[in-house]
Length: 124
Image (cartoon, rainbow, N blue to C red; front, side, top):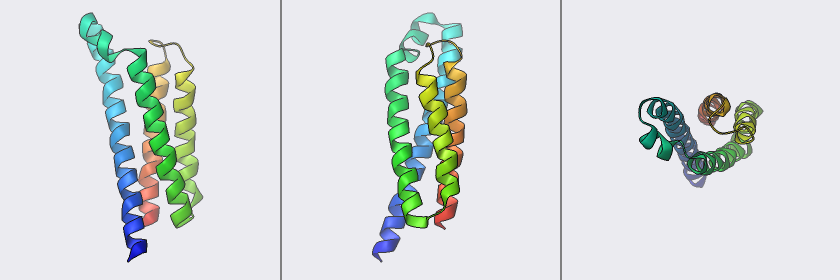
């Protein structure tokens, strides 16, 4: 019974991490659209601080969920793919805001979400 509760908890972490990745994805797209349309509204969403804090939170949650999954089911592939996404996201943090960092962030988030989905599949 305890193993089932732990498995559900890990699945919940993956679901939350996928949701956070989706929110990040929408934020990046909305920022680009709003910056193009309304500079005042885009200034708030496009703030480097919002991007950096959100990305760090997503990376921490992603690492936690992928690590727990690896310990519980023992399959390396989800963590390997998710780690690639985390690396791309970390690299995006080093790029100047407003340039190609949004593209790298979206690519990293998509790869990380794939790792979380594989983690959920491996749990079953």
